[in-house]
Image 1 (cartoon, rainbow, N blue to C red):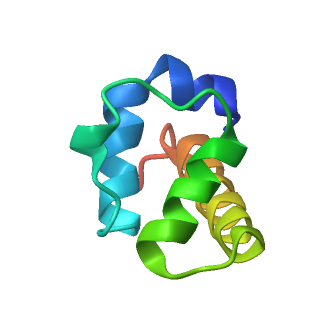
Image 2: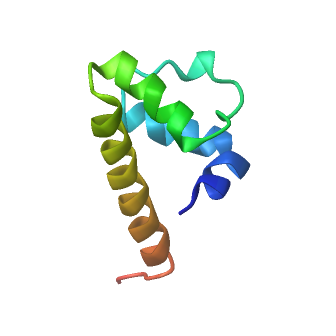
Length: 77
């Protein structure tokens, strides 16, 4: 999943971000930030992280979201 995917599906991304980053006030973000760096800065401030730590956390979150998206069509019976 890329930043473009996030921005284009912002309401879904917001809900998932709030689940992963509970201190992030998504109500204060009615529109996606202009970049992942802007979002990382906001996460850093809210979660007492350095900007680098926040960026790494976002990268991990995006990676997991990408894996989940890739496995969605697989149905185990």
